[in-house]
Image (tube, rainbow, N blue to C red):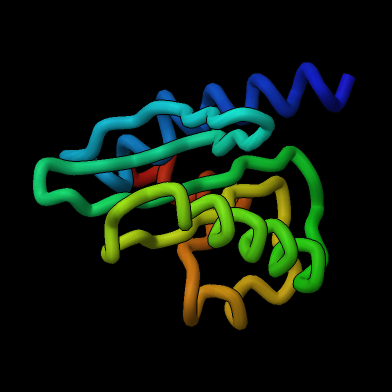
Length: 116
């Protein structure tokens, strides 16, 4: 059941949520060998956002681990202006992570949907 909701959540984030935040960006997925990134978001100015989407409640430590792995995958891209994003059901202590990353959870998504 969580796999089903996870895929649906990822589709919601890709098709409805993040396009409201990053209006002039294009969205896609990325694979290379055994590596995968849920969302690659880019614009015409060569800005790039790499994002992971998780239908889970994440502790600070688990969220930081996911973001560190995402940063490692970012080495495959030849761009200096890469930002990293995590979207999850709930991210504990997200304010600490927001200093260095883009972090969104259901609280943020609810607010975004109300404003759009």
